[in-house]
Image (cartoon, rainbow over all chains, first blue to last red):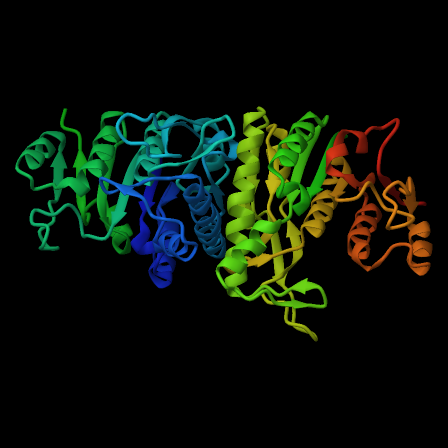
Length: 264
Length: 264
């Protein structure tokens, strides 16, 4: 099977134009087929502030009301997405920017209100793997913003880590998929204050121990849960580390960052 | 050859949610393949005002500085484009939202400064007809925002009427193309104050007379020039009229609006 790398980048890369350009150069050098998933960045918060749209957070998570949805659709699917696509095109990488609505790529359900109403937030229901595969077969590189739709005309704000893992899962029927989460640290750390204390590899059983002993804290748990979910569903491996080390992260012989794997 | 209809809508439809929904229902009922091109709308101006980005106009045309480019990319390629795509998906029309950067669909040159510096404005250089045709062959409906790129990483603001005519021209090698310009009037008017004085048809020689006699005024000239350019380059016909009459505009036996044609 052909190699496919699904890479997710976050705000720290997106907000820094030089870091973003350098990252895209390395991304373009990845061997095999590739998909990029990007989160937001400071621009959405800055605009929210300038436009006096109140930032509503509950338990550390953003509530997406209709004005916030409009804003994140503009920033994520508009400015950030098209900017990345134009930069990749300049590198002769035939990028195509997609939201979940485009070609019905990612169908989601609006999250049901249990105790908290998150607003226009989507939980992924179905990925259009056939269309995404046809893009890859035609040497196009899909670039996904974290906006999905419900199939009834409603756009939905969706977690970019989850989009990356669900894309990886949907495509591992036809591809040998590696998933790479780029974030601000060198990898998963033994000691959160020491950026050199990278855990080289973590299996699913290691993960349970690390959670029990609180080595892995709250902020990392959703990302790690997404990663192990992808491994359980057939993704070959998940690598976590810094965007600026992308090519080292995927180096087969001497990788940087943390490798997550599924112990059988 | 298969039928292809390229439809351009402007701000008056985009700004009115009910008018837009009704228009999209009719658009979805068009026979044969179809492409939608959309302009901006009031949202860009409203945001420009709220964000205190000065609106610079020279001779009735907007100057696109870098902040304005960021804003129109957000609004056109982000909010408006994805909103239209999600609404079409809800009608089971497999829409795919594209800017000119995506899949290198529309390559443009930044307009050279002669007497006026229009800023980040693009004049179309090349259309990727192969990719757009492959979308159509796979029963996808491209929805274009009026944002292009220069191939060197720079996004550019581009006239939506021109995008529609250049798409129509590029695709008339493989399709029997009709181009429909929707605007706020019933058609091209004999008397600009009388919406019932629609000129049923205008040939290129009629057009020269109408311009000489100032029946067609300044505002309409660029649109009409685009239309006749498309006709000269092989587009079957161009229809101009109201978005709310879309199906009547393309009615073969008893059309509404104004039909432009090329007299041989």
